[in-house]
Amino acid sequence: MRYCTKCVYPSLAATPMTFDANGVCSGCRVAEEKKTIDWALRWKQFEELIDEHRSTSNYDILIPVSGGKDSYYQTHVAKSLGLKVLLVTYHGNNYLPEGEYNLYRMREVFDCDHIIVRPSVDALIKMNRLGFKLQGDMNWHGHCGIFTSPIQVAVRYKVPLMLWGEHGFLDLGGMFSLNDYVEFTAKHRLEHALRGYDWDDFTDAGLARLGRSDLAEGLTAKDLLWAQYPTDDEIADVGVRGIYLGNYVHWEANEHSKLVVEKYDWRPAQQPFERTYRMFSNLDDMHENGIHDYLKFVKFGYGRASDHACKDIRTGVMDRTVGMEMVKKYDHIKSRRDLERWLKYVDMTEAEFDRICDTFRDRRVWRIEDGRWVKDNIWGDSSAYGPVHTEERSTTGRKQKVA
Image 1: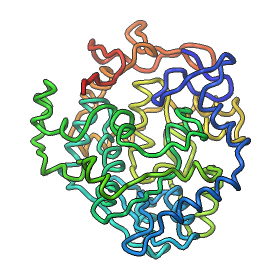
Image 2: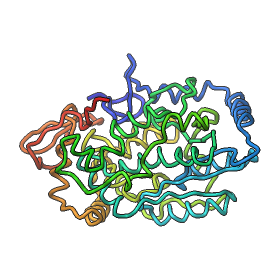
Image 3: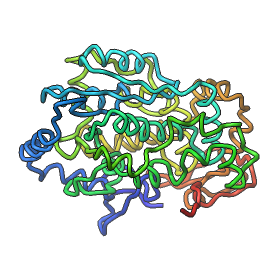
Image 4: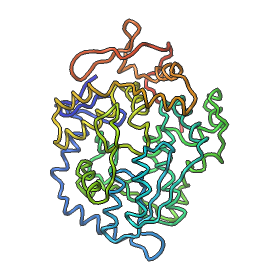
């Protein structure tokens, strides 16, 4: 295990990342690009691109939104340009009260049409269980919904231009350069956001094909219509194109959150999270900063506090020493209130949860010493984090699947 010498990211991260000869991660190097970019020119390029897509019918632009600070900022920018905006939300059933408040105010605050896709509760509970058991991510359905429902709506309403916020893998890990002007692709959705799985893998027929009929929940194609990505021909007929606002404006979440709080009375979390210090991120799923993020720690040995500290170190609002303190304080926490709520939600025992978690530990991070899981830390020593609950082994925690 290596750690970036500028931020706090480990060399084995959930996002594609490289390290240079000085031990600096690609995420930090891409963040440094922001200082050299002519943002006035980028804004002009953005305005020209928008003008090319202004329509005389339907909508000028579609924005996938969760109701979070970024959603408000994206919509704020689009409305400042006088665009007719269509908002689209995938609702995974576990919003925090503050997140729900922010989401439902968007229609009124911005005077936009707003389509909210809400799968059945029964299907979502089953998808929580399946995502956890099949690939160690109970929120897989959320990634799928976010990167599917808006594209379905764009095809249906014939809206060619979609506006995303920042490219997450670029922003966190430096997967691309800001000079690449990367856009949304079906390839990124399937291979990275969904890690090689698609909706049909979660049906009983798909699980049988994968040799995992033991996980069958009775789901069929009709239960997962919201998860089915449009065909290439359907997308081409409309000319759907997804651009990232982060390529055209200096993206800084701390500044965006201040703006939307002051201008639109957007609400951050009212109760501190147990696994991170930030109060304005991931309000659309109460488990995102809790049990979902704990699974990342179990698999890769780091969590949301590392993500947030890296962003703040790169921006300059936190130094690396404080960032390391945040990692030490939060990353390993097993959130009790969050876990208990989720276990009740999916009808699972903690013993079963722990046993399944252990099957997804990456052995490049974790080793067993005296019956406990041990890993190396950024502050220079090794620590034990909980007992071994199973003898099953997983090398990467990722599915290997042929096309």
